[in-house]
Length: 222
Image (cartoon, rainbow, N blue to C red):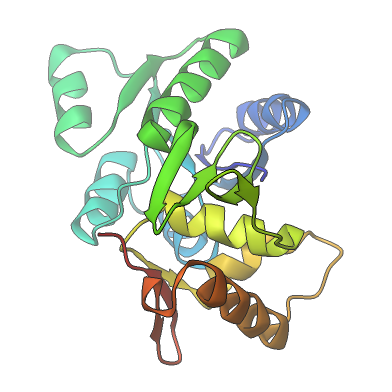
């Protein structure tokens, strides 16, 4: 599953450079040029990591991240900024960031930090997740197993299960699920999503996936 990055940067040239570089490395990048645009993207899209400049219009990076954290969002965040005083660094971490990189920076260094933080944020998600009743999910091969036997799932059903396991006990709104499961050229289908949910419930237990009426679903972790 392609990992997605929110890039908040009002320097259009730098934003385009970082976007093209990360896309070449296999990421999907959503660009915002001010804090309010970033808020809209966080609401509408499924985001795995945030790259945030501080000095941006309307709502600066510090305030944007503080607001995001207050809402309970734990998506990892890296500040990319020219600010370099100890007070600035402290404010950045106090607002909820996970890492800090100063301008100018090498794109290779940025990539190392992005990959390291994503790997860390997945934690135990990286190899094997136990689901009870001899069920477990292999996150490297993206297979659902019962003991030593593979449980057959379609591609989007596997993507959906992986998404739920990455965000246990968090509400996944319909739009964020659509964004994660369907590619650009595909039209999201509510009917297909319901069918995938039905299959997953039959495979891992109905009680594991909670319906939040008219909003989305939540994977219930023990």
